[in-house]
Length: 480
Image 1 (cartoon, one colour):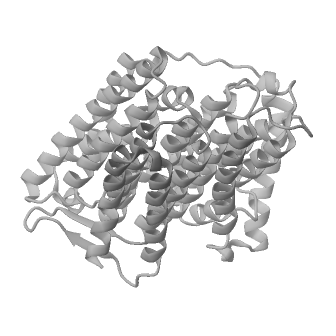
Image 2 (cartoon, rainbow, N blue to C red; image 1 turned 90 degrees about the vertical axis):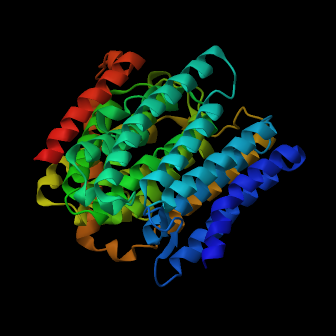
Image 3 (cartoon, helix red, strand yellow; image 1 turned 90 degrees about the horizontal axis):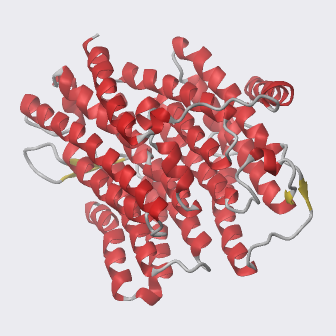
């Protein structure tokens, strides 16, 4: 069992190295890595107990793989496979596929980590690979966006590393459980790093520009799995350390509201999806005990939406309202939008019901407002005009796109069976009412409202300042 887990962790890195040696097999080897992770995730769900791997005897450096890890690993596998299918008939080089499978492997390692050192290594490797994918087009704009991401990520990880050292100084262990006896400044610094890496609350305002300016498959990877490498340890810590749970839940509610507030008024499709990624990460944190299942549904739907956005004739919603899109593309867009809005028969419904049932009383109003904002946001997609016409893209490219949709949207339909107990009359009526109110609010209010928020806070120099302010807030929260 342990040997199999070690082989799974190392396989993507071996395949990435092999791609450089045999570039003609780049797509096949990358897809093989995703399929191995998918098979391993299914195997994890069948295990009666968690899998624990102790890497070092005395320092608490361990890997733990259980059902929570399984949901995140399965998300990573399906999203990576979909991105590879999407790029299959494009001109992407072996370098692209190698970095894709390396980032896949490093994210897998993060999802198995239960100590701060293993997690640090995994996050750093994923950050470098993500930078290389963001900058892959080699344009001035893509290089600047990539460097901006890399700098913000590295600064955040410096906060994190200092916090990890303080935890070891206090407990002589790097294990997540050491947060229970760690000094307040250690918790504040570690959380500061993870909030930035995960795109949480105002610490995640680097995310809209990065995700919206990257190529569609890279945006799908970033939003579907990469940001969750910072969210997973927060969920794991909330489940392991009772004192941390309320802080994680608080940031969950704040993040859900902040992201959806921007998304409702955003007129650019990719920026709207990026802001909504922030909001949905808040849903994962708001109820940590079911965060894994919500991460799976969000990863699938958001990756699908970013890939679909590349097939739309424009990024501007006002222009899209005047340019009918192809009906098959529109149907895929509607399925994804219905799922993330919580419509029955799709996995997003069960995920939202589970999350709602595990909220604390003080969270309910805020999360209901966020759910209403989600319905308003995606009404902008659902009510776009459409007509029966062939997409303008090359037919071979479209085959890759539809294969990706089969993986992602098919996954949403299949995952709907995980929580079939959700289908009671009470559970069905509430999301339908929320979606209906959201659609009415869109048609009579938000469709006509134009609000443009300043983007000054998204500037690089301001992002670093926000980190410092957030560390002060976190220190105060831990003390209280």
